[in-house]
Amino acid sequence: MTDTPETPDTPDPDRTPRPPSTSASSPSAPAPDPRTAAEITDAACDTFRDNLEAMATGSYLRPDDLELWEPPYPPSVVADADAAVRDLVSAGRTAVEQGTGTITLDLCDAVATAVARLRGISDAHGGAVLEEEEIADVTAVLAALSDETGADGEVVLTHAETLLDEE
Image (cartoon, rainbow, N blue to C red; front, side):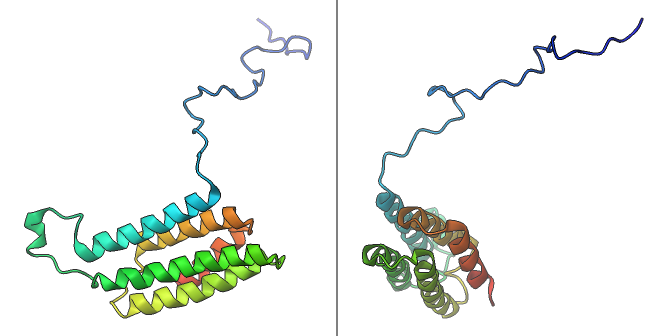
């Protein structure tokens, strides 16, 4: 028995590349988000605040667990951290309104200010405000804000990661 090589004239149907399905009913294609970019950014800010509030109040715990639990920081810290993040968002939106043409740079400057504020708040409470989950929430805000403002998200997120990783 001899093997015959395939010729270009007889393509193997199992090896022929097929275009990806563009069907709207495809289970792997997420539905488009109907919210505006600003609404997505605001929702990310709300998530950050809500998660901090849950940590400050213990609202995620069962009533029996609250008896032995001590909050990592007082609820008043939530407003301070939320203000730092919302000021960051405001600075990004202001840069767009002013049309400076340096949105990414302006947003990176605002990130530096916000991270310094958040780090100060967190350090005053044993680092509890900027733990892994909260950093992920801040990163989500920055990704949404970058999309909203047209800033280079990769640059903004890399800058934020560098600042957040500093001791």
